[in-house]
Image (cartoon, rainbow, N blue to C red):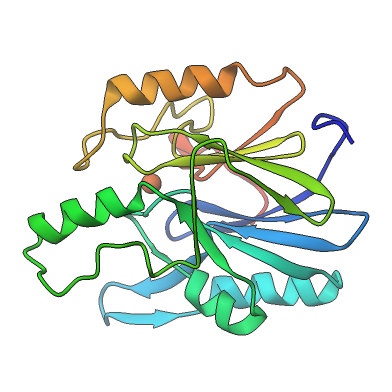
Length: 220
Ligand SMILES: [Fe+2]
């Protein structure tokens, strides 16, 4: 199957609190799927965590009779926690992120003076290297290293779909900030060029929609 012919079913789940979009990417032939960038709900005032977003995704997966093969993060998120560990517990599917996460963790360990923190990426089951391939059912997946927003950001290219998270935003929002530790506007620019060089048929899925000027996403 050519990469462009492989067309996953993509369903987005919008989190109104963080303007994040979480994705379920399914292979129509095998009913296997990957979950990308799931949000763990966090209430700043009470400091409490909840799994409303993740449970909504699990309900959808059960309704659609899908089985989860991967729980994927594109990068460490500054605006929300990842529900990947919870979804791993519920589905048994392995979690993954880009292997440069180790460099981000080393930075954090130093900045936040957190000597006991294990900066080895062992919080995920799999650390993907640039160019590494994987599969969702029969759909081919590939890792594009997309640093800039964070130095560990990756794009998951699955069939004709690219999950770019913060590397690109909606056309009326631009790009993500590049001023977090390890961020770089220069590298972000180069990463965007690589995404734009993907085949024209590529569907690009962003990780946020901030709905500027009151633009409504109209589906939640
Ligand atoms: Fe981000």
